[in-house]
Image (tube, rainbow, N blue to C red; front, side):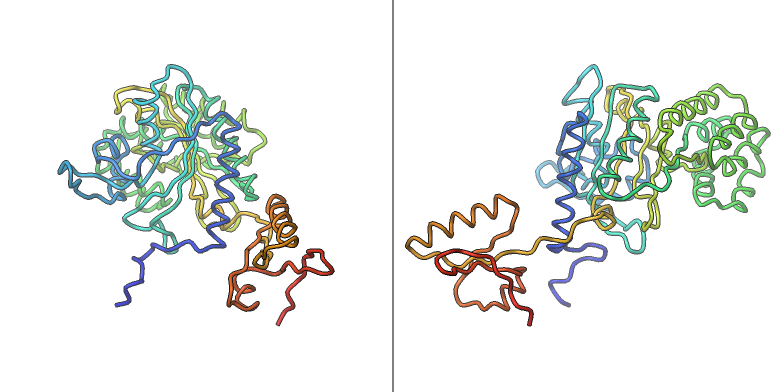
Length: 390
């Protein structure tokens, strides 16, 4: 066995990709800061009681667990940073009004999300606490669209749903936890035969209402279909009203509706959304409202936000071609040294990469290291020249 091999779906990030990821991280965090989002860095691991509380079964299954050698208690390596940020808002900041927070860091999953996915995504996101109105949800959608725009990745579609619709229908239909989970899976996969089988024994109007959810997909007509054919329950009326209000506030975005999209059912409490773009097989970003998470931390706070994998985004992002480097000779004592060091400083200040030469290495090695130009002294002046291609 080769000792240098890494576990499956775990990989190193090599220089070219690493710099793209880091450059994008800086640009996005700077933009989030300009919108009033304060940066926080939660720990990589916590006791599972706080790491998983209120997050649902899905996150529990995705979380690596280990025993703390100091306390003997079970800890988890975070699989999602958003619950940690909710804890920070509820217990450490403890503000009464609106709080905007952002974050970026690695998370670890027990299994990859797809055939080509990594088990160590780099999650970046933004969360808004303290406002329950549709204005906060609209702000999240606009901010997500801006994040994608800055990255050069246009959102071709943003699907919006509302878990409250399914939840109230499941409750009135008398579904137990296992039935709800099976129905959730069928709706997520748009598996109509399984859906028909699962609702066969349910009472009307809830059987027909659950079968209707996959049809509530598209533009504003999807909301009209839901409003006219779903049961006239107060919770459903409120959910449709919230969706209409958000749609009215983000008219410039490519928004569509999908009332069968229930991702994060056990975590989210209201409006949910997923953004899609060309070149990515699934959703590039996920988000929504999760008001109940603050409550389980002992302080109920309205909350909404979004997150995405920065590495996936960087692979899709538009980047200028990487700057190559300039090779500078080793300075020697004398007048030339002063001019050389001054020029190196000027070039670096202008954004150039300047690598100072080390002895006993030929030009081919420096070209391999990324140098395409070099500094040469001609008639007492330092000039930039280009390495000749072999």
